[in-house]
Length: 259
Ligand code: BTN
Image (cartoon, rainbow, N blue to C red; front, side, top):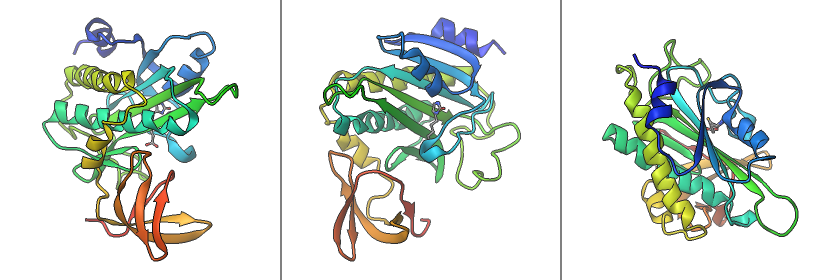
């Protein structure tokens, strides 16, 4: 098999300066380090991460030969309240790119997980930095981790119920990595150029796997249950609860019953 790093170096043509590594600690961490001297947008791609980071202080399993791990250092003209748009735009781009390479239909679990066939195949972690001068973003790092194939030894015990991959145990095809990165970046870049426009939220809502579902989340140590009514343009999850409509701006919800 051709070396995947060389293949990507020769075949990827992205609208960002692109750095490709066999392994890094975390592409998000590397982008944050690079932000000190790089004032232009750029992409960092790694074929594995030894310390991949997930949301809410979790780790992101990033073994070699299984997935693709990408971060973008971005300098969007967004204010603090609008920075969530980076995540939702990335979710739309990731879901569309997964469909493009697989011919299947993926769904978005609010806010930023992508599911295919009931399993999480892609996670997104956006880390924004504010200088404190004005309300604008200094820079943002958008990280995407995609499980293309099942890891050689399967997923670790703690995530094996939830995690899946786009192609499972199928034969590995290095073209798919390049196709995903190219398609993801094309769609994301189209939306990014038009920020803070939010026309893409229609697609986000259409792909939401929580529409009409009973979910719960933890508030002040208590479980709150609600039915998902929808998602507004500010990415708030609108829940019908016993005490009325509750807009949830951030966090994580779980399905009450799997269906
Ligand atoms: C999540 O599902 O909790 C978010 C996972 C984000 C993982 C990606 S992989 C590329 C980038 N680098 C990291 O360390 N994390 C993100």
